[in-house]
Amino acid sequence: MITYELPTDQVMLEAFLARDISYDGIFVTGVQTTGIFCRPTCAAKKPRPEHLRFFGTAHEALLSGFRPCKRCRPMEPSGTAPEWLRPLLAQIEADPGRRWTDQDVREAGLSPPRVRRWFNAASRHDVPRIWARPAPRCSPGACEGAAHA
Ligand SMILES: [Zn+2]
Image (cartoon, rainbow, N blue to C red; front, side, top):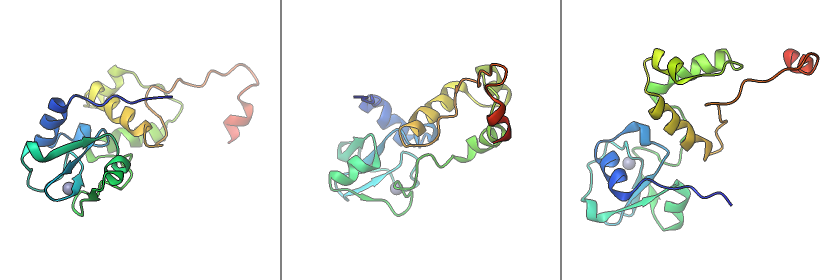
């Protein structure tokens, strides 16, 4: 069974207070006083830390009796690419066979750890795993079908 480790509460708290978008999809926060859960990036006023609970997925928050925030819509697929990632995703889609390296990502003006974190989180939510996908290794003849697909 695969288990996913959440960052520590302290890291999540800081990411939540900073509205760090690179943590979007990594965790959601339930607010015990309101019964609502949010993405880390929610624009709503931040509650007191002692009222927060952290969950790895929106599903867990729901099961614990929290309702999704109407503002940040934490039930929407967290694979929905954040603004900063879209240009990179567009490039990946334009050339799906390309293997991206950290250097490529840096040249695109992004931080590789930040991009990797997003893809790692996205892969937990059934978003196709694009990051670090090995380039197809074609032996002569083996990829003919794929080339026409
Ligand atoms: Zn919210």
